[in-house]
Length: 133
Image (cartoon, rainbow, N blue to C red; front, side):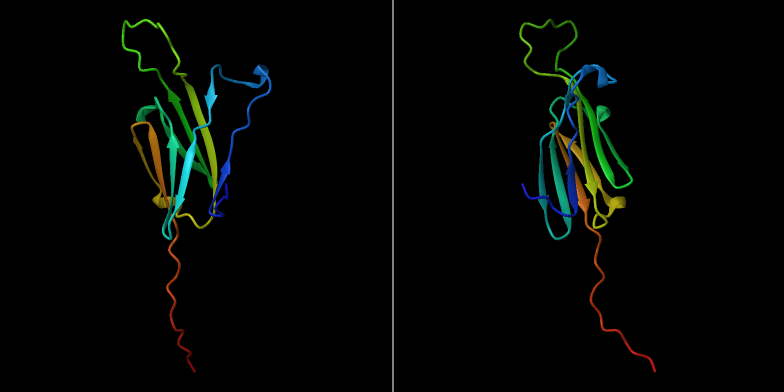
């Protein structure tokens, strides 16, 4: 995969020892697709079982962090017969370059897919510079 210089993927490293974990449970790295146009970069993150209330998109010091918690679709009073849907936490980080206009980032969660739109900073339009004498 070629990485755009405007957005660098930072993957969370798997913990080697349970003693290093500070919270119990599974941590998933959501799979992403990244698209680019002249005006923006779009990131799609697959986060099944995540509600908008449990999703946090945080931007600090050029690091965009996604955290969320996936819950089962089990209703009240329902007992497990077979449980293949793993629940746990999602975590993924991206480093943003100065090309991204961080004040205009938009996020939308729809059917378990997070769509982040990262607009690029507008470049100054070319113009003729007048010379004063």
